[in-house]
Image (cartoon, rainbow, N blue to C red; front, side, top):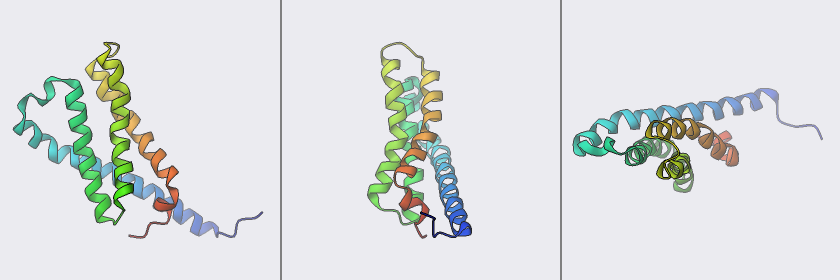
Length: 135
């Protein structure tokens, strides 16, 4: 059955989706850059353990992203899902870290790399919220 959606409105939806993804990545970095020094100042030993450091960084990024999503009027359940996408990659890689199979650098690198497709997966799963969300 042919689609009744105009090509330009479909393209606009894809652009809105991509822009939202980029906005959230930027908000994550803002959270990490803004809160990282504060956490280091409050808890100087936070970087002594890779697992603690990774979870603190995921928290900083989640706060930045959650603030931006709330400004953009997303619901709390959507914000919680996106924040979970920040933690799950780290939790997955922390298991091999705790078993001694990978080092702290791998935790940080793999966790950060997996965050991006995890966010995208949440957005695709809830694509109606991200394609049609009006700000």
